[in-house]
Image 1 (cartoon, chains in turn brown, yellow):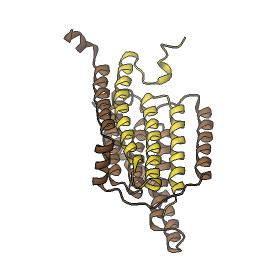
Image 2 (image 1 turned 30 degrees about the horizontal axis):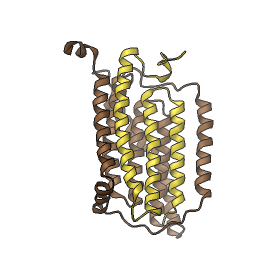
Image 3 (image 1 turned 60 degrees about the horizontal axis):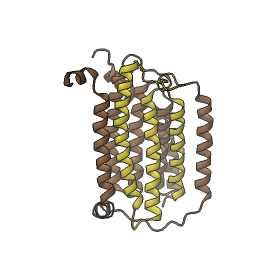
Image 4 (image 1 turned 135 degrees about the vertical axis):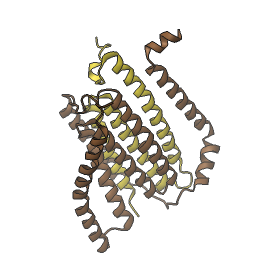
Length: 207
Length: 102
């Protein structure tokens, strides 16, 4: 247990990350507030730009950082930013689910996975030699998607907040069968995960 | 009102970042982190389309719920496999698991 230096690492991550984030975010916030004052952008757009910057920066951290614990913690920031995006898109339920499932469950699972494999001995990983190729392919894919998305014209209608009651009606009435199938998928996946990761010694004892 | 293209471009960039991570990382768990990024990008796309183009039926939000369910199931199962592979081979790097390489 003494080899797991997680608490001090998290301290350093929080302090260092806050300093870097503050240094980057404060000028951006000043520029955005100036634009807001000049009526160039609206209030929601200000929030959007801030969230987008945080999400992209944290996503880059999640794929670029060499320290595995920091990379996994960057995923929390991405998940919380995306929950904010869901709030901007007027779907509160998804924002709550996003915080609970991604910010809580998935990240804890990933951190446990890191701790149970090699993070305690060697928290710094080397990426593969295919990095330049991956970089080129990633840039190309992103460029194609962005060009396609901006090139198309969408006839956007009016937006309204999706009420919890309406969402529940739609989910349980119209999508009842897929909902049950999804619960079955979760059950099978989790039982399968236990069956796969069980130790051989226990299997011998049972047999 | 925020233009729909903003959300679409953000989700495209996020998807490309996750794609880069899947290709460049060697540790299986970091590949999972990148897959989560891609799934989250798709989620944003679904919700943006549901909110802007289909506000009466919001099917995209339902789909996004299913995406989250599948992502949770996938992480649980994949971590089980990774832990098993780590116990067998003492490594969590995907390019060292080459038993099937011919």
